[in-house]
Image 1: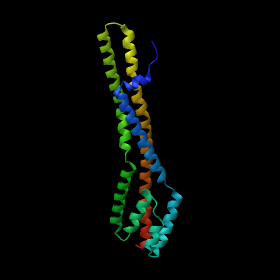
Image 2 (image 1 turned 90 degrees about the horizontal axis):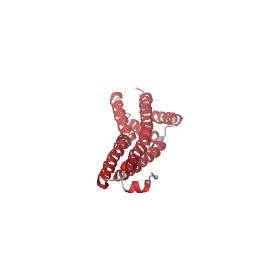
Image 3 (image 1 turned 90 degrees about the vertical axis):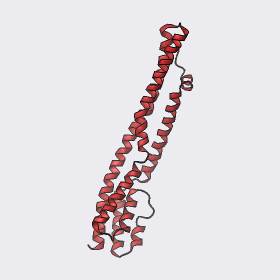
Image 4 (image 1 turned 180 degrees about the vertical axis):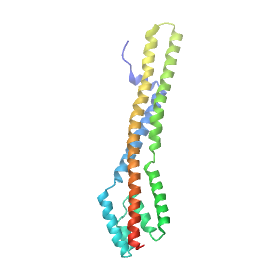
Amino acid sequence: MGEIDLIQTFFGSFTLWILLGCSLISLTVALERWLYYRKIKFNPEKFMGILEKMQSALQKGNEEEALSSVGSQPGPIPDLVRTAVVNRHRAKVELDELLTAARMEQRLALEKYLGILGTLGNTAPFIGLFGTVVGIIKAFHDLAVSGSGGPAVVAAGISEALVATAAGLLVAIPSVVVYNYFMKRVKEMATILEVSSIRLLVVLHSANGK
């Protein structure tokens, strides 16, 4: 029995085309999220410096200077600081609720597109298995139609059909690994957001002299 012609198998299986599309989507999402998390990387020392500048500016009653300490930096932490500064005159309970809402919004932004990776990681093996089942059905059908060839014909057809299962796993495993890694980053950032909002409340409480 000769080797499997992967190119011919690929062009002859619609499930492999589906899995190719899934792999491209997974790669695109993973790259987009990696660039996003890299852009908003948290620097504790820089954040503490921002808090000190902000507290000093607010004690002088200079809101513009306090906001300029954050600048136009992207990411959940700067957005949280801007929300706190703009609403600093509100009661502590109200400000705490606003910061909680801001954290929830930022978490949604952090988890954006990650559901796609999780879905692909769960469904890709089943797509591959479906392709294998279809391939096996076709192999037995070809054997029944030809009426000759024996087990060798069936074995060749099944071996080609199993390529779909392997392809499904090839898409699913990286997707699941990347999904778990990014979810770990999301949980870490969520914890940082909670700690930062507590520090912001303390700083604003001190700056307002309440």
